[in-house]
Amino acid sequence: MGIALLKIKLMPSSPEVNLEGIKEKAKEIVEKGKGKNCSFEEEAIAFGLKAIIVCFEIDESQELEPIENNLRNIKNVNSAQVIDMRRAFG
Image 1: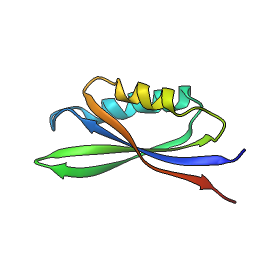
Image 2: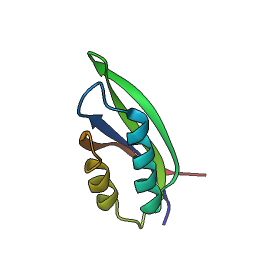
Image 3: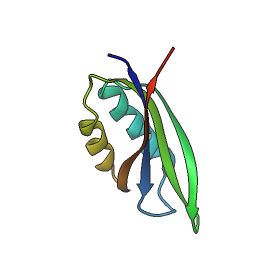
Image 4: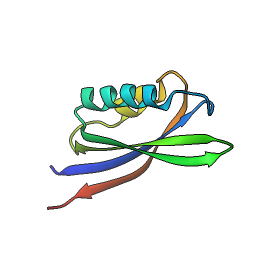
């Protein structure tokens, strides 16, 4: 099997939420789910609210649903949605 590159958008509950705390917890969840090379991007939404884009790679044979569910259950996160999934070549 190959490697999948994923981007999951985490939507915080408010602009006052500590994004660094969410990133730390998200990285733990991704690594526990056998994801590698976890990185983050921030996307401005509106009125000071920023979404966190979690980027990582994972073996295609691994299930993604447990990672997505655990990310959704992080305190102060309203939603987690896969926004991009690609097969890595090379």
